[in-house]
Length: 262
Image (cartoon, rainbow, N blue to C red; front, side, top):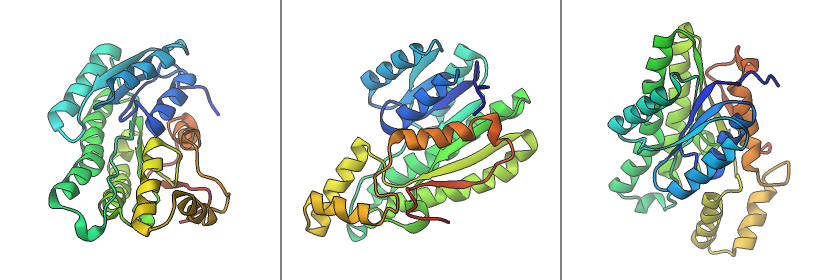
């Protein structure tokens, strides 16, 4: 893969832990300066910044609630003040509160949709405006989910929000193509993160089985026979942020170990 991310400037939302952290580190290893967005995990975000600086690139931790337009604009402003431009945006911030569909409250539905879907829209809009103004193009990668294609039990609101991200990605890609802005999304399957481990435990309770049995059930439908690692997702995102992906836009790429193939 090309190493042409040197001196590029990337914003990664929800980058203090899990998949977001892995993406931020992967970009930094290839030379990008990274803005580590977080909402509540300040200490974790600062640790990621320190890790990034170990690669001899620059990093900045910025707190922002991606579901609020004013905070997103502030995130973009701080990035421009620090680095002068934005070349890459990775919309990773998301929430996944598990519940039975019939028990989901209106408040819970709005919470998930606001952060996952609205947050992706607000960040994409704000950054795209800067990319258009600069005339230099850019790369935008949205983190969706296999749940956005298949639906996931006990995650009706989450599935709907990720399906929205996939459709939004395709629409934005068409509108932004004339400005040389590529917009793609990645659809992870079951990835080993703190969030995934909590979901597995909750799923087991909802299904009335042990966590061990739940693990076996999930693994049985993954052709490659293992859960994904955060680095598996980060490597695909890294490719989409590179010049090697210049002729790709509007795509929803699965990183699921073969669980789905469409």
